[in-house]
Length: 254
Image (cartoon, rainbow, N blue to C red):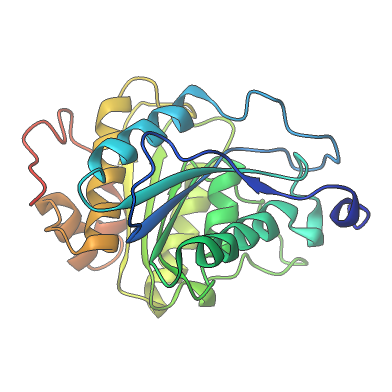
């Protein structure tokens, strides 16, 4: 359905969030949400308040490390079935980072349908980590193939999901995390209790968690104790880790 998009439109990277470093040593690619099926152009307002807040958080956290943070502007709004257009655009964006900056590690950070794109494109050779926030995943159907997880081997993976999310079923992200954890111990998942799809109630904690995880994966910063515990814990404990109120207030990245 969406095959005609490639010659007509191209994905692109937005301008670096904050001040682009003179020497880039790592990159975060922000993947906004999308729709299940749509060939329409994305809105000129490229992202939700959550994605914009993530961009500012990463730009601030990585200022001294040479971190380049870019939003990915998709060719179209839709995932579009087997075309997986948003995941294709995420992979293109990782290629573009390598073209611009050389062999630097990349962290994909996706929200909603962008979370699914981050998970699917996580196998790109430049990607060493990914954060999927409230990822939209398809209902599991015995007739349909399961969402793949083998591409996540060798990557650090963080999934964050509100337990009251009515747009993206948190149980589906738990099941995917459980399958991924069997192949890759570096998978953890945090539950934001009583929060919905936009994670408004605990936004500061979600931002701090994402930055803590990405700075550890990209630059070897010490991870916070809750993230270390979640990665080390056997399923299901490390995949249903509650995100504590106030997380991040006392974090210091070294």
